Image (cartoon, rainbow, N blue to C red; front, side, top):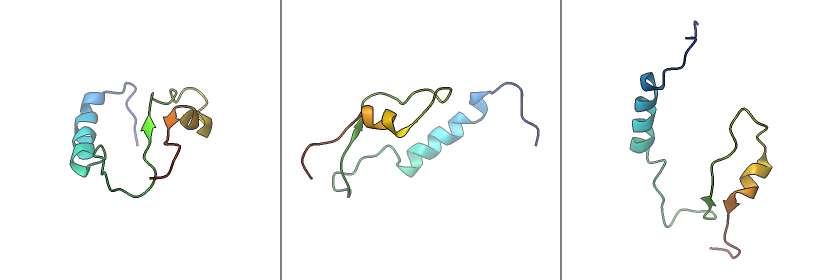
Length: 66
């Protein structure tokens, strides 16, 4: 497989953006099982060291159960 030297997002991202919308990954369900959460800021760039602490530091969960 030959990889291109320059990434051209317009070749791939429209397809995946539509797939994400069609599959409902951005849709929240009020009655979904589990704890609700909110990701306040995006995680660090993949060029850094990503670890579970980043998600814990920037994720808010309710103090009481659902």
